[in-house]
Image 1 (cartoon, helix red, strand yellow):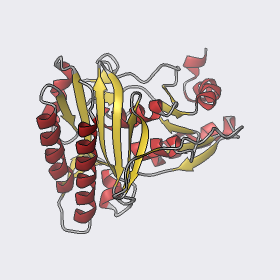
Image 2 (cartoon, one colour):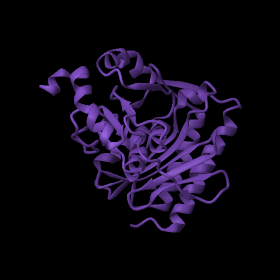
Image 3 (cartoon, one colour):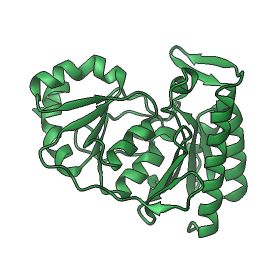
Length: 283
């Protein structure tokens, strides 16, 4: 089924509506639970998860819906649905809890195990980004009409690399010693918003190494990144894949490291990163 203009309008509305709810609820009382050490969920996550699940199940009844906060929905990935809607009601829950602005509502569409469309809404900026190979890359600010994103031209000899706090602590010193021209930009929060910073030209590469990111974290931003012409690879240079052989089927976590960025920069960095992070791959 092709996404119609009516579909796109409805999806923009529900994603923004849920994000605005999150912003409103962020300053009210809500409960926090620990799913496992270091992994938290709030009643806000759960509320938005239910709303988004119901919306997409009703709008696309033939498709599978997989969400972060409905553990039972993960089993649907082993069912032969034509398409999957992969939903993260709050990407960056810890940032949301701490009152930081770097959280997002994300919805991604996976067809034949390929990301084909994604929506990322940043409530604190009232900014919605969406796109896919057949759509291009769009942004809508506030109540404004969607506009095509201007994708900046690549900067020459620039190696700005976004990295999360955990990966920075674990690997940045080692990488910098071997690749001194890298300029690390530490960034907390949403996986999707980090990818959007690369799409919008604020860095050349996003490097994610800890292999904990899940299906609902990646489908949306990778669909947008690829529509923007970015390269999405693992350390071995393989495309980021969504097949059962590559994912952990219990958690739907990627077993691949993830490198997203300008193609020439990714290609230049990959062999050098392999030599530092996994010497066996460079033999």
